[in-house]
Image (cartoon, rainbow, N blue to C red; front, side, top):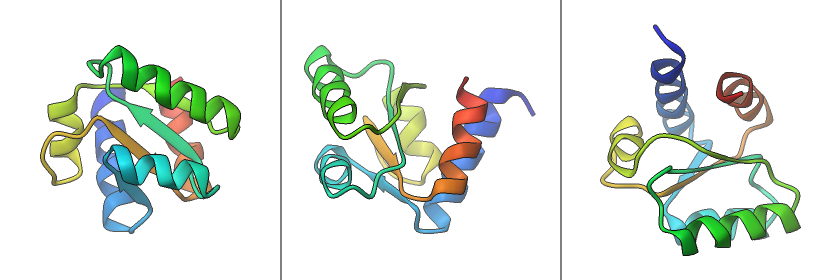
Length: 101
């Protein structure tokens, strides 16, 4: 299993464990409420979306990474197209960060 496959697999695990929030509004709420431990934005997100989440994550001191495309991110968590995801668990976020870097 390569790194990319492992990351998608970990995202699916986060979703099953109930430690993943997806969608722009839910992700934004998760960041502002202080529950987000890691935010992942699709690489094909619009410039406005990228700026909005980068600014929010910088302000609230949440790590943000750009990974994958909308279609594949959504498929990995059993949903439709997803532009943004927030992981709410420290351990899972740390494991994902290690694989993203």
